[in-house]
Structure formats: structure tokens, C-alpha cells
Length: 115
Length: 111
Image 1 (cartoon, rainbow over the protein chains, first blue to last red):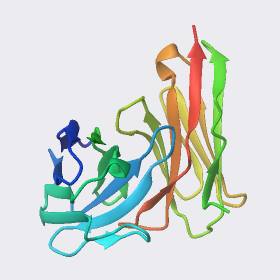
Image 2 (cartoon, chains in turn blue, purple):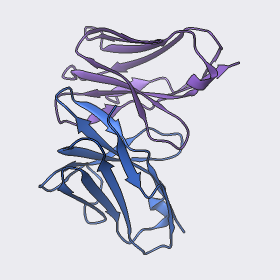
Image 3 (cartoon, rainbow over the protein chains, first blue to last red):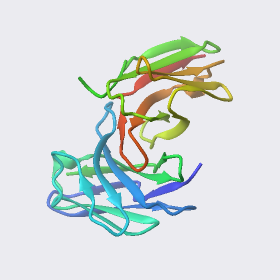
């Protein structure tokens, strides 16, 4: 299947700092990428849909000024958690849509811990 | 009512058993259905993809979609301890639209 990478895989930061997470499609171009958040033993919660060259579409309840998404190229989308707080600690996962079949492939995830 | 429902388990089976994992959904507009396997602290891995109703088989895995009853299933034959993971079902209305995920079923295959 298609390969999606994320960087970093793990990050620990102090409260109030900003953290950028990168999501890359390695062997294909991804017009559409999704960002999810997953708390322990819970399912994936969609945060936003990222479309190359346009503004991201955020799900209800997700603060767009706090979770900045940029999809500047067909292979890269970034999520920046601004002024992170301990309650932002979670597992953040991106995914990319591939091909005409609407298949969605996930990155390995980024574990964010805010102290 | 959540759009995609799934029994969270945990489900424990002996090695070699046939595993049946199921989801129900409420939105008749869903057309694309997927099953993912997620190991602890890892991203979900796409297992099976189905468009509309029908069956699809890939090795030990068979996915079924019954749109009339809004029911989707994943069968695992000859289950192995390495199949122990959380299995997530997901549904989407159309191309480019987000997928709605079930809460996942935790499966343990005991040697």
C-alpha cells in the first residue's frame, strides 16, 4: 500500500510552546489529507481535512487558531499545535487519500506529551 | 446515536479460531467501507476496502457489506497471536470525504 510518514514520532514539550508535526506521502501525491487525534483506548477523532492549496476544513469543536494546518504541496501537510497545554497531549495521526478508490492510508502517528 | 457502532470488546479467541468482527452504521449515504488494524501506539493499517455491498477476500481476511441492513463484517480465518490488535471499521459517503470510524474492537488471539 501507499506509504505515509510522520515526523516526529514522539515529542515532549513544555506548556505554552508550539509543536509542528509533518505528514508526508512518500510515493504518491495526496491532494487530500486528514488529521486525527486519538486518546488512549479511544477511536480516531477527525480534527480537520487538509486540501492542497486551500484552507483546511475543521471539524466542529476544533479550534483552527490553535491547530494550524498547512498543505502547501501535494506531498506534505503540517499540523502546528500552538501554545500547547497538557490537555493537548494525545496521539496525532495523519492520513492521505490515494487514487480513485478513495482508499485512505495512515501515517505511524506522533505522540505529543505536554508537560 | 453514533454513525458507526462497534462492540469495543475485548474479544479473546484461541489460536486457529475464526474471528467475526462487526459494525453497524446509521447513514444510508455511506458507500465506502474499510477495516483497519491498529497495534498499540501505532497508526492504523488498512486491511480491507469495499465499495458498496458485497464480499471481498484477501488471504485470511474476508470483508462483507450488507447495505440493506447497514451491517459490515470482517472475518479472520485461522487466527494467529499476531492478529491481536484493535480493529477499526470506517465508512465514507463519497470520494474525498472524511471517514467516520467506529470505536474499535480489541482482539486477543491466545496461543
